[in-house]
Length: 490
View 1 (tube, rainbow, N blue to C red):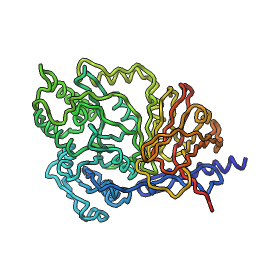
View 2 (view 1 turned 90 degrees about the vertical axis):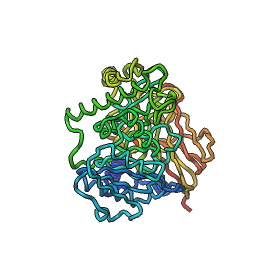
View 3 (view 1 turned 60 degrees about the vertical axis):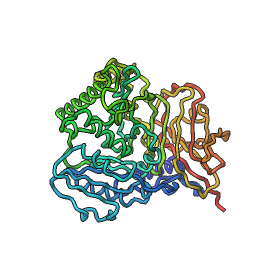
View 4 (view 1 turned 180 degrees about the vertical axis):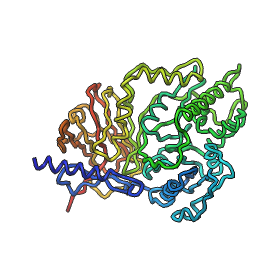
């Protein structure tokens, strides 16, 4: 009874640790939920990363009516030590008639801040113009009503490169679902999808330049240019990479998209983008503009395989899985014209029915959000499906061994259903033969959670991979998944 009570207290404290806001985003997370905690355990954290890059990303923030939010976002981007090797410049494009000045941003060094007070409101076109004016190869774009955690932005940059054909887009579950269903293939020529940028996205500066050039070739109207977000991913003719986000909503100000009128405007411009893309291929020898090598457009067919990804809270890392996150329904992404995109999305959504519930309420991001109460749940794991935990740029650690830890409601799945592997910093994959240990940490009115861990003797580890031996139709949940070290006390 006492142990159960202490475990309850531990989970409550963890929930308090999780209650992050922009004012306490560096709160640490526990290495274990067992009570009493083993003092030899150390959780992998934001201090466990190697900083070996030169800052090469310009953060572009639009301001309209949320000045306090913009100040808060810019201050974090300018000063957070975790972003020293990521953010070279914070570029604030002010679409509002109310002028901004450097005095509004006292925490930003002069050499790290640029403010442009636009003489007119260019809406979303502004962020692409700002990106083209950057001197860095990469741009990070976000709206002013969202706070992106520094470790998430660091993870985005660590995973992104000039070899990426598309950007990486952070999206909350409902928008990730919409983007997953807004994908379409037409023969082998058109293969594209849609994703918003405002929740946070990293793109190449060169892609912004090419995108604006393509809009010019397509004779885009002033209104179409201002609504550039609705065109950006679709006109690339490739599938955007989507990550579930760990963002914090800031709210305030006047939202741009309000009610059915705003939704209808978005649909209209998305449809206009599909007509533009179809126009490019509707000739005897496509592409029909820009010669044989039009700007921005990807002509090579790209894979439509959807790998679920989520950045971690508490350290720059990424969890990804091949488990089908939408196992129900009969989704179809092939069509005779790209202009069928929204109709295809609606039909696919109807076919999924209630199977979207887990996607929306138990998303992958809940396994790495630092909160033991939330969970990623699935009943769709198949043989050879995997979960991969990427530490990105781990620094040498002052501990003797490394452990992968899973807080779950189904220890039997962890202990019997998976093969565990580690990837060393030198790139070699090795199977773990150690035993998985599980201990009950909390018993509530309806469930018991178990803390399971497996140990790897080496500390030079960059990735953990968990692969299913067999089909696992039993529903199971991962409440938390993390890495910790064990340092023998001497």
